[in-house]
Amino acid sequence: MSRILKHVGIIMDGNGRWAQVRGLPRYEGHRRGVEKVKEIISAALRLKINVITFYAFSIENWQRPKKEVDIIMELLQNHLKREINNFISQGIRFKMIGNRSLIPDNILFVIEEAEKATANCKQLLAQFAISYSGRDEIIRAVKKALQQHIEPEKFNEDTMNSFLDTAEIPEPDLIIRTSGEQRLSNFLIWQSAYSEFYFTQTLWPDFTDDEFTEAILDFQKRQRRFGKVSEFART
Ligand code: IPE
Ligand code: IPE
Ligand code: MG
Image 1 (tube, rainbow, N blue to C red):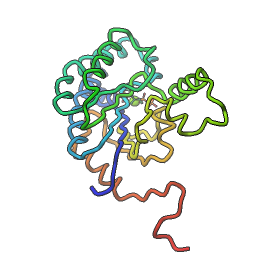
Image 2: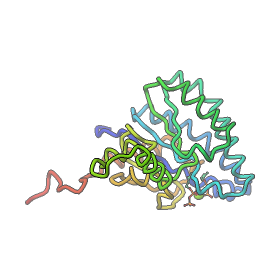
Image 3: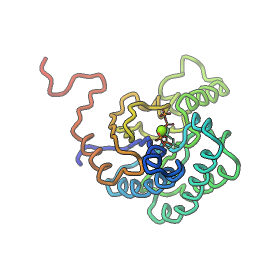
Image 4: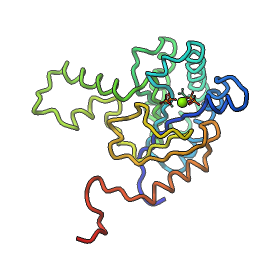
């Protein structure tokens, strides 16, 4: 556990399949999935990770049947209301990344109240990507830059970073995706340029603190080169 790991992203996938194999409605998988978030936040606190980002709902997910979308939004809202005091007492700062204009007002209200209530918490930043897609985030960032009439010569990676929802936040060192799919599905596409990936067949409702720890240990063994030659390489 020696190597510094500042930011872990998690693509929580497989809730629907978890329910389907048990003959349960998909929302049962989402319900169990939300419960898992708590366990992994505790693990992140224990492992002294600075930032954890959960991919909870993509912009593309708005195209799912209305009933499923409504249930997911309801679950997210209830989870936040229920967890807010735990967040405060454990020093967890809650922050949403994603497109706020697409979120119903009553849900956005709960999200923003939670952000305000935990704004000064310092132990862990728990980001939730809700109504999020990486391309949408990039387009919104470019629009903000254009509105500020930034001169093209002055526009660089730092400028771009400053307009993203993740401004000021370190890039994800590690991205975990459950359920066997090996793709980003529009998650942190700009920020993941040099992230390490950990894919597991485990469906999100079955994911555990132990497997999370295993993923972190696996990350510790990797050699990151960022395009340079390894410090141990021979010339
Ligand atoms: C992930 O589980 C949760 C969301 C995308 C909201 P899925 O609902 O995608 O589950 P599968 O992939 O259909 O099993
Ligand atoms: C990605 O999962 C989004 C979240 C986990 C919130 P999806 O299930 O929506 O992704 P695809 O459709 O398999 O790429
Ligand atoms: Mg899925």
